[in-house]
Image (cartoon, rainbow, N blue to C red; front, side, top):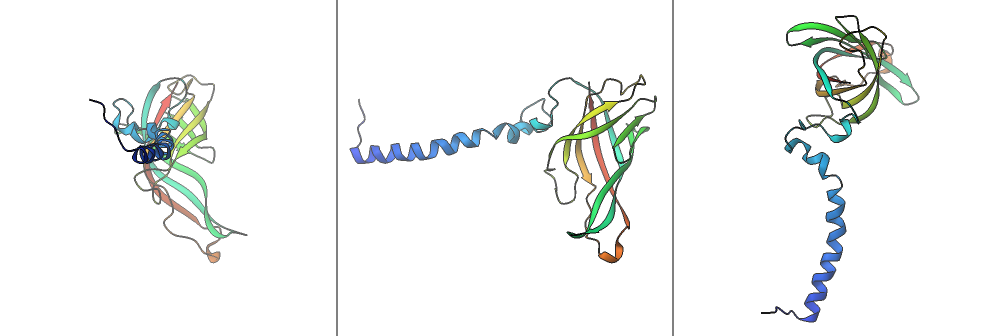
Length: 188
């Protein structure tokens, strides 16, 4: 049996299809990142935060503070980021530090790296309070050890680290330390 429809109704269906198809296809272009948390093995990490090469070799937990300084300029007073200052843990054992304006990471065996931001994604849990998730490139020192050959670092599962108030002109130069925790995954 062949189904037929009045000519005007068929034109309406075609117009609706032609109008909605581009919208549906545009939505598909971002669906990978949005569904990554539902796909086994991705750990819910947005694809833009996955290094282009390598494999994870070490995961450490950071606990410390982000240090900000009250700055006054043409924008008015605000807290400007200065540096992190945190201990790095493997389980309950302190194994390293994260510190300084270059976000230097030192491990207990003497190996160390400095990092720079490659890309970032606003933390889905609370972007007003939590640091952004980030993929960082790593520059290792020449000492052998656990961090030797590390090329990328993922900063994940962040909690805290963002100032919750503004500073005033009378507070210019004042330091603010904001507690934070995060997971750092090192890739070779």
